[in-house]
Length: 135
Picture (spheres, helix red, strand yellow):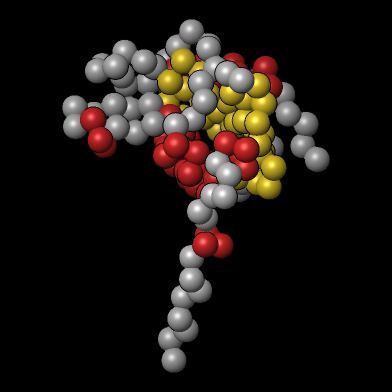
């Protein structure tokens, strides 16, 4: 079992907010997660004038996860520029679910929750049909 340093995750998430690109909303968001191999990864939001293509902090963090060798997320924190805890939006819950270790914990404004509590009956890789073999 990996020990979770929630304070260190909050510090990393807050530091990530300083890299946010948020000229439209003014809401700098940063997140950080503990990976099964012990790494701490982070991400920030990157807005776009075409609002629908804005990247949430969770998306940039998942990019860092895969660029750094992959793995699964054990614990996750998301904050605004003042350090206030934010709960991931629905889209980001789905993104996190795909990368989550079983029982992944998230710190939210309402306390600690598992990914399954935030996204019950989630659609994931097991929901997809098995690809047909090339015969």
